[in-house]
Length: 309
Image (cartoon, rainbow, N blue to C red; front, top):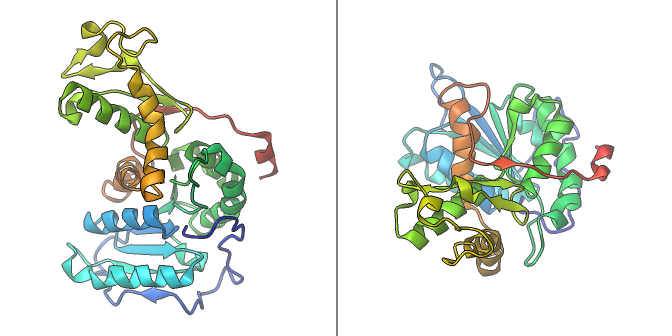
């Protein structure tokens, strides 16, 4: 969400079971064919990440209706209009609508939560925890009520804890609540290895486990390049006494996010690919009721303060 820091008011409708009267709701003039299967995706949060996901979904023709929700009605209306202006070049027209009324998400196949206060320079994901939990818990409950068969995809940080929160407050089975976890950390690991070894990133296979971000743990014993275990060639790779200094990559994985935030204010592009691979494509293109497999295993410590939710 492009809301300012400290915002704690959720996107709740005062008339939850009535048609939205939000004056800022914008609708695409293009209508889907009655003969096509209706596929609806709702994105809560029209900031940099939410909009990157929205554009990618439209370009890949993954839905027939896209709903954008954000507390900033002026911005979300402008984003919707901007997307509508590009529909003439889309593979298939998509009905684009949205506003600040969360009831517009009703009957969504997939709900993507990219809302929350933005991470500050030097701020850890853990520092975001309580601020985003207070904001997101009521939103998630409402999304679950309006679309009881949807899949919830969490992108908001700290993503592992927010995914647990979404599972807890939604009442959904675990198969319908997913977060991007350590997939981004694993992708950074592969990218850094490919640069170090001067090989294509598609030929460098490596995994990160733990919690996304500062607590992530690269699994050096799993690294293979062109099908060959890295430690077959470099037996001490990743260890403290590594003569080839591969262990420096572990620190680079953790620092990547902080460096990007300092330079451009946020990260967004990997969230797009992980969202589509984890959940959106399997559900909408393959008509799968669960989410696709991801890379990496996420483990997080949930604070006792979450019991109040």
